[in-house]
Structures are given as C-alpha cells and as structure tokens.
Length: 416
Ligand code: ZN
Image (tube, rainbow, N blue to C red; front, side):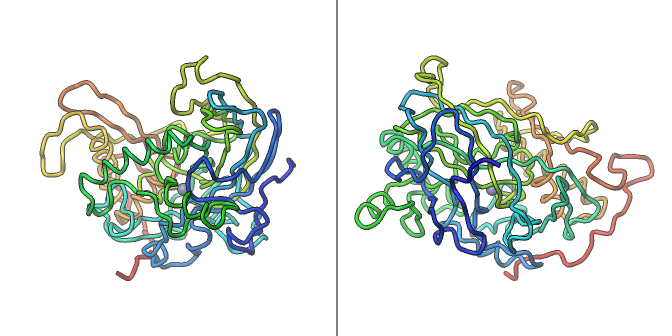
C-alpha cells in the first residue's frame, strides 16, 4: 500500500484531523503535503458534505444540504520542482470506498445520490424536479444496488469528481471577474447563475487570522470546473487514467476529492453521482515547460483509464434544441441534452418507475451522453445511452408493451 500522505480519521470531522485540507481555491492556501516527481502516495478523501447526508429514508438532509461547505479537498500537495508553465502528470493508480468496518460515513459500504431542491442548488432538470429527493446505494464489490430503486444493478465507474492544481493570483482574479459579471446579469436568480467567494464556512488548511480573512474573501468556490481542472465530474477518470494538469504556482499545489462510486455523463441531478468517501492512490511526475511545448494554455488533458464497466447493448434517446413549449432555439446542446434525458425518464416511467427514480438512474448509472450533432441548423442533437443490462427486466420496446415492475416503497421525499 502506498504511504498515506493525507490521512482522515472517519470518527472525526474534516476540520478535526491531523492534516486539515481546504474547500476553496486560492494560490495562498499553504501546501500541507510535499512529494517529489516519481512518488506514489495515497490520499484519504471525505465525501463532499462531510457526513451531513445520512443513510436513511428521508430527503430532509439533501433539502437542507450545506452548500457553502463544499467540497472537502485533500491537499494542497506540493510537488518538488514544479513551476508555472510545467505540466503535472497525475496517474490515478487506484481508488475505492473506505473499508466498511470504519464507521457509518458515506463510502463505507454505501453512497448517495440526490436531487437538490430548486431553492438550494437546483439541478439540470430543476423545472420538472423542484423538490429534494435522496437515494441510498449499497456497494457489493464493484456493483451498486438500491432499496430505493429496485430492479436495477450496475457496475460502478469509480473516479474522483474533483482534482486540480491551484490557480495563480492572476488566474483567480480572472475567475472572480468573469463570474461576478455573469452573476450581475441576474443577481437574484434561483438557482444562482454562479457562486461568488463566500468566507462563511471556508476551510483554508492552516491559515489563520488576517491572512485567513483575506484569502477567504477572495478564494473561488469549488463548484465549477475551470482551467485548473477542478470539479470536472468526468466519469471516465477511472483507475488507470493519466491526467496532465497545467501548473500555475510553484509546487503545483494539487488537490483532490469528491469521489464518486459511479456517475452518468453530465452528473445531471447535480448531486447526481453516487457520492462517497474513500482512498485515492496517485503517482505524479512533471513535464518541464510542458504547457508551451504542448499548447496547453488552459485546461487539463487526459487519457481515460481502461477499467470502465463493460456494457455492449444500449437503448438511446435523442433530444433537440426545442423547448417543452415548442419554442425553437438555435443549436443549444444544453437544451438538447435536457430533452434527451426527459425522453429517457418518460420512457422508464412507463415500466412503473417514478420520474424521480428514473432521474436517479440517469444520474448514477454509467450512462453515456453524447453531443451527436451541432451543425444542423437550428437543432443541436444530443443523445443519452442507457445500458440495457442494468435492468433485471426487458427494457426495450416490444409489441407486448412495457413489463410492469414494482417500484418499491419507502421512497424518500423531503417534507417541504
Ligand atoms: Zn460529487
């Protein structure tokens, strides 16, 4: 087993640990771990709400989810010799849930998927699903099943939802400027257009006093993916992946977290992956000056791992850039993917699933989302592919009509 350079004790909160990580991006959050190019090491990662979501049959905890507290990140990790302009090579050697015997936290034999209430974060289909909802998934080796979504079992596609390098002061300033400009176009929107820096609940490793206050007032939230990688939620960053991150500060200051047992493309319910805590084994190296050599001005490039679940038959649904009110939009792939997902949800409902259960399947199972056409004016075409083998009943259309399943009981809703 590689050296655990960032340990977490499951019986304590994220801020009550031997090494305290962070939940904002800023160049002045001090590195907590020091490694060398060529090193292999293990991080423990806490699920993104640090235990606020529990294994029960109520969605009240998702309804009240403390969004200013996310994401708990393990790091920053300084890599000796890394300088701005380098590419940091990060190999994901292995990852998985924490051993079950260690306690009741998500990642210890179970994980969760949720729909955020429109008033607290919303999601991809928040117009249709404005209320909080929660599904608990149980892990059996690499397979996930749920008492809340019967007749489904699938092989997970485990990956870190969030990994990235620290921004430079200049890059952070650009983030804050452009995101503030977007928020200013509709500052009262629910859910908000973007999230400005939020000192409340900021965790900044070992910073204290005035320096803490200054950094907390400037530091970027971790929700969006940006030039440093960050919360990309790329389901294919499985074990065996190699990522090349741009380096913006001395040491690169790599951080990671938000482990997912599984997720469909798009992580569409926002809390759409199967969230878990766990371990993450990494190997790092450097390509000196690699950003210029390979034209990587911004954004990580990566080679996906080869351990994705093996599914060979798919049922696919298409969507185009036309609203539910039949208004034509111009080549809007976001709308097209929404329509494709809504088609899939309506289809699965004919078998007996509630729309919420169907939405959760799309968020959590290893479904494929594709941008199939973006040039055929006026309609962009997006498609969503469901692996048929995840259902224990025939799910393709036939002359006999949809096989009726028992959708189960105890489906949790928030008591709004
Ligand atoms: Zn996540």
